[in-house]
Length: 375
Image (cartoon, rainbow, N blue to C red; front, side, top):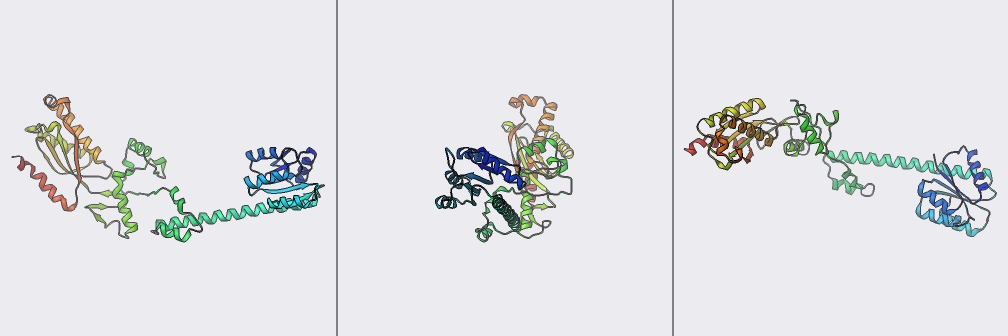
């Protein structure tokens, strides 16, 4: 459906053109203006496909109007109706890309032929634009497919620089679909999901991200694993880097050497307190389902070698252990609050180091040797 604008200072002439359009079953999207200035106001508000204008009008004549339309609204089809059979008018009209120059009184058959040709021209242009858009969309999809399969962006830019600007790639976000065999995503609590969703541009395709979980610090090894599989052409199940085992969309056997100290390095973890600390830590490990591979409680600090599941943030795990230990210790030994100013058992800092297969034995020996060093 196209929009027509009839411009003539005589109402009877505008009605006559409207009647000729109705004979061609064009009765909708027909607008009118009495001079060139009014016509420009209509152009500012509406998208006009076909302009039908007289030449001799007050304020702004048809030739001046054509000049403005040619400059400001290129692509508009224009038809001039005039009682002047002069070459100068026709010459100017042609310079502004006029589709047809019809003398008054208008011959209905000539009018029908001209408008029919313009309508077909617009329809053909639309079809060509649609085919062009479809071709460009196919080309974009093909280029994205090549990029996913390892083709470099610079190489594709060289091949397509005359056809397509590769800047469209910036509109896309990198996404990874992860599938886990151990209900990893389903075990994440709703608070963590909401917090993650509020800080992330990634989305899952189910239940508004309720089965989705992503955090850069935690998931780096997962993406590294996928990157190795795609770009290095290695089997995801056999890659072993830095002592980590890779599975179908998750990382397991994550081992950390953890160390944290008492407040002010006070030597309060001694006598029966060190034994109680170990028992409490074993209980926490059982409750939160992580494994303590080695542990030593020194008077002013604690060493742990732990093996935890991928869904644990190591910072959260340390908070759980330090918080629970402090609470239970102050209940069992209220005198500690007097010795530790402010009632804080632990220094807020801690050390967490990932452990590889090569360094694991060294860490175990180091932790086991702590008691000997303190003697």
